[in-house]
Length: 605
Image (cartoon, helix red, strand yellow):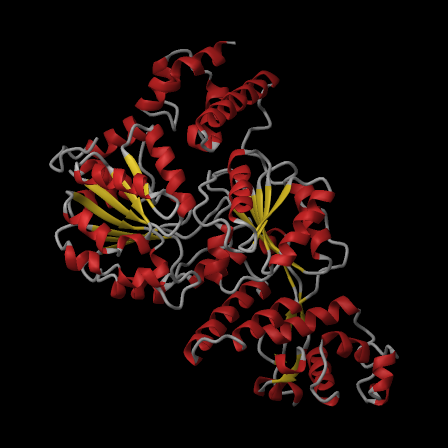
């Protein structure tokens, strides 16, 4: 299918229409495609769902030869290959899931010039056999996806990515495009340096995902809070719930299932067969909620994930952005919801301090954690804070919890002094729970055992309830006035920053803790308009049932056949002939030929 590189300037748009069925480019896509198709190198930073794949798939079709796509994501490779083959593009993959015979057949097709795109895992690419096959082939371009994996300080480092500079060394005439959705300015510089992209043109799209609503709640009873969120906003819809520990994944999935949620677990401790089965169900069935460690989700090209929830704090804003970005890839409203408490801060700091990494690694990890805590504790717009981390300025969004229900702040100077004084007077040997008992004047057995009921701070904080004090201690730790001592089982210790607060020389303003009984979650507007007639809604269900049958028959995810947005447009517009079908976004020439008659029959019923 590859075109002549000297094709007319409108060749890219023509292929976009005919092959992919899209009427026009989005954002900087056209400029990127034309630059790479003309033989230029590029670094592309574009949010998940922003159309990164087209930025190398179209140049691959516009240039002679085979485009090699480097990706660490086996699931994404298979999804992309399935989707491209539906469009009539000659695509294949080589990774650890294939047997020797299948690999040899793909290598023969590569040498014979029978492939438009070949997807390859980085560890396979650097093998002598693979490099030999590439030297025998005509190459159109190299696309290095998930390029942030080259960063040793990033959230998803892959050692094999450090060897990818050899592509430029061995094939200097082949253009390269590196792509990522997640990179702060430091990571961008590292990508350029390690991949030898000093001459590449850099394209930076907005990191904003305006369709995602960001919400961070005080963790009180996290599982019950999660269930209220799912039932109130996303009942029967697909979502991902992230937990740090495998055991918590198993327990949360089982609990949600017992509450009537179609939930499945996913983590590295499961057998490969069980993981594959659960992943396939998530991709091919509607309304599955996957409870998982962060090992799940990268490369899952499922467009209709309506929410991503975190029951544990991620390690960094990059990790948070990457994980929440798996929601709403279709552009329809979606939620990023997280429950966060003092225990999360203690847990993450413990993981950093106990890490076997270098002192520099621990320092960088601490800086990244503090940036994430700043996002959690901000009284301003979440999106403004999130985008500023990536060097992008923005105005308040009106679509995050802080904009929709602005939190109260209060002069917490005296409360902070009491809390810090309590840490000091109890010997800096106790966690927040015990300190709150002392401050509120609870004569528990442990308080009496240590003689803390005789301290001057005993009962000094009776004016605040337990929830308010938990908010105070959490924010004091997040803001660096106290730190957990992991050798003393999470006991809180004072930092040097606490000294001016204790002396009354510094004012402290904190967010007011949310009430125990939170307001019910407001339901996001669905992608399907509420004004749709019963006939349109019934037609949409028939189209989805037909799509599900096609997906089962071909053993591919339903969204590889057509996205929900394409089916919604068909149900709303009800085109009567092939010409009418051809202008629907997502129906290219190959899909029109393959599915057009069946769709028209369904639409006439």
